[in-house]
Amino acid sequence: MIKVETAKKWLDLFIEQLLENKVYLSELDTAIGDGDHGNNMARGATALKEKLAEKEYDNLTDLLKDTGMVMVSKVGGASGPLYGSAFIEMAKAAKNDEQVALADLLQAGLDGIQKRGKAAQGEKTMVDEWIPVIEDVQNNQLTTEKVDEYVEKTKPIKATKGRASYLGERSIGHIDPGAASSGLLFKTMLKAGVADE
Amino acid sequence: MSKTHGILLVSHVPAIADGLKELLSQVAADVTIISAGGTDENEIGTSFDKISQGLESFEEERVLAFYDLGSAKMNLEMAMEVATKKVTLYDTAFVESAYTAASLLQADAPIDMIEEQVNALKVK
Ligand SMILES: Nc1ncnc2c1ncn2[C@@H]1O[C@H](COP(=O)(O)OP(=O)(O)O)[C@@H](O)[C@H]1O
Ligand SMILES: [Mg+2]
Image (cartoon, rainbow over all chains, first blue to last red; front, side, top):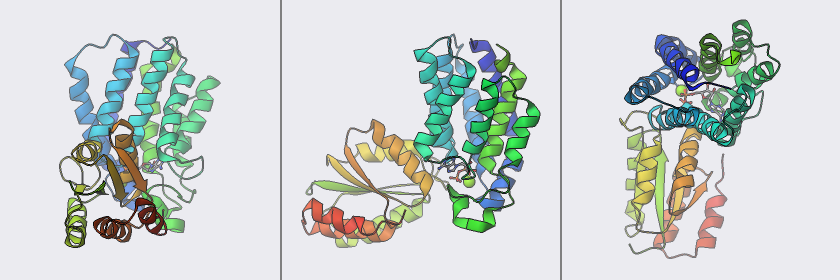
């Protein structure tokens, strides 16, 4: 069972990492997009920090739902509705089953992303990070190294979704920025100990 | 309100949405056209809140929605899920299809004819 305190710690660490990696994420987006992914996520992170400071959360559902709403409203780019849908769907999963397993929670998040963005695996998006990570969580074998490895694996893919798809072949050879920010989400998840509960 | 349908224009840039509205208004003075461009801070991007507010401010019950790039569609779809209006979204060439819809609405063309002509401009 995922404790709300642990999940809160996870989000605090995620916020911190997004702010710290703002320039890096925007650099990745400059190569194959419009150069704003770091700024978008940092804007969301700042707003989320304020939101989460407003009250004490006593259940996972509210925490995840508020996170999703802030993402939808504040992030701005495609990543806003995508991360927003992910967190809102995770909130629903936590509401339906208080004992929800981490892999199932993340799967609900991925379903939200795919419902919103219609991307399948191999289109060079954050989906390419979420799918193998969830598989590893299921098998209890996710590590920080693996999270990074999956981010790196988006490099040779040719983008067929999102802004990078307008570049066609030229999108090959660059890390997908959304996969990289999702990598931060999963590394902070490990660090906070969400996977150990 | 003098037409059955209104038109919503969603772009990543406020000036694009507003400029397209200007273009359409010239041929469709009696059609309600609402623009929702940019983020809440009027930066480049799209805003779920702006789009939602745009949709709710129509007096018309039915809205034809046009957008420029992919992420605008995602915010538009989220807004449609909570909207009280009946909204139809078109994956069509932004300028040309919105212009077609506006001109035909102004001319009181039947909606199926409008849809047919607009859908012929599908590009995404
Ligand atoms: N349809 C989609 N499905 C899943 N992820 C997507 C999709 N479109 C874009 N993305 C993700 O969003 C990231 C870009 O986010 P961001 O730069 O914030 O938005 P924008 O592309 O609107 O500028 C991409 O790197 C990719 O991972
Ligand atoms: Mg971008």
